[in-house]
Image (cartoon, rainbow, N blue to C red; front, side):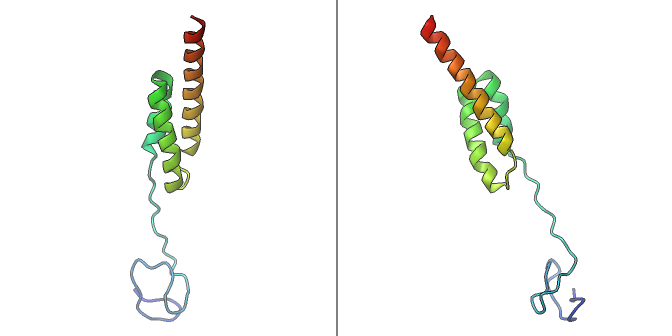
Length: 95
């Protein structure tokens, strides 16, 4: 493809002309990745709190790589897992 501003040939996938710096009007399709660990951690936090806690922590760490995808879900999984673990620990101590 050719730059609309300077007329020089540029890469077809280029968003900006390397010669003049003018935008080409093309936007790259953003990768929309789902944070599977965050989802799994949230679901497991209701049934298997320890597994949910581990998956939620891993999902929280992966959220930084994915641009924040699943961050809030991971936080919810961590909180729910911690509450369940606390309830079980209290129940075991008092019995």
